[in-house]
Image 1 (cartoon, rainbow, N blue to C red):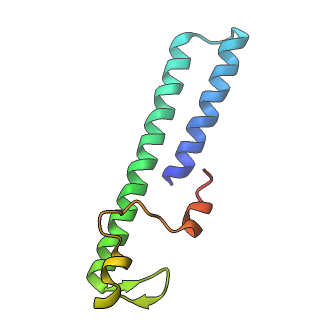
Image 2 (image 1 turned 120 degrees about the horizontal axis):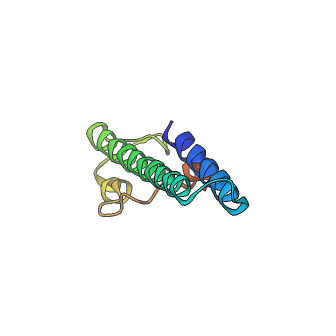
Length: 99
């Protein structure tokens, strides 16, 4: 949902820039569109951060790696929990993010 809002915000800002350059709208409209775009982008990033936080919390509670579909045990615990590196997202998920 927030990804769609971000895309809409970017499109609205691009349209506002075009209208501003054509002289059919003012600076206020352009600034509002930019502000809304930035708010949508921030919300998207916050939602993604929360998603990864929840994912790693669930993974830690269940001791199960959902991407590799394997149990996390004592010998691979540090490697699979990515201690101190929660931002290391599997590439397969990042490909679908449209970034």
